[in-house]
Length: 386
Image 1 (spheres, rainbow, N blue to C red):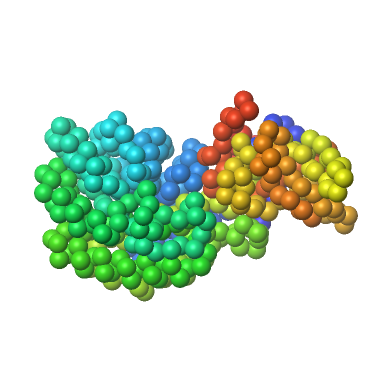
Image 2: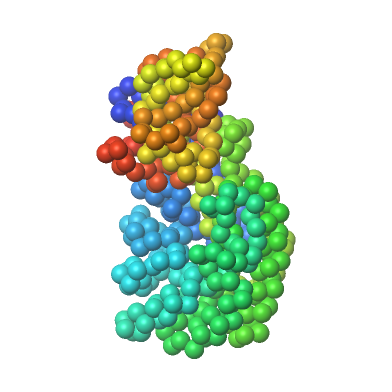
């Protein structure tokens, strides 16, 4: 159970992110043991949370890094991730980013288009280097999640469609500075119905057989990430069901002894360990509603505005109160979409109370912005001496 030391929060400027390192380490202990027992390779999706302290903790458990920008590759290198455990995906890699990753000797580029492949080959040839690449394939699997975070369908800015795969592979096999060593898949994010992963396995099996017939020697099979978390009951389900998730791939994928199985967990590792702590500025009485106006806003946690997502809201200053009321919890940003929750039944709220928006460890701090000339939120860890 996450314990919030609110008596010490008065020394800290709100809003800020509070990270339960004990929960993070428990989660990492479980997932890393399953990986070790089964010979799986894990690469933490840096885009979920790039806080240096978070990265350092994850690196200490032996995970690699899944990066989607040159900045993330640099952050992973600086955090101490082994270069041969760094994967670099993303549809718009710049020449400078590609050069940096080659010089860092990362494990693999996850390539998402034929023009990108040709550019990586040209840069590698100029540098007299060999670039290891995996082709990102859209297996046409519907992840049944929000349309903004569904990525595995045929027509998408991400990856190569099945119809274009043969041309990509045949071209890659002719390029002298390209080592086509892997395949990469990622069908979406915040997936809670695990059935699409079974379908993904079936499609991967067919794709691997076809690539072998084309002469491609595939040693890396990267199935991406996407496992969801419980946003409504973070205390009841603080750690996702990794066992069931991994067993799907263990049971349904058909790999050869020399083929490695790679995963890219992000949200499932860090999502539950972080909470946005915000202070109540005013309780506004409307005609039919009460508004709890807080100092945190969509600049600090954009998921509700961007994805219509809901984070459980707790009044941690008055959690034991038997008196409650219904509030719209809103922020100070000059946008109507700056709303964290409508008709939230919470223990009675007063000016100065601290509210916690739970399950905000993923895509919270890392997506914060300075819109309205606001400061970025700080971060506090459970082992800090406040």
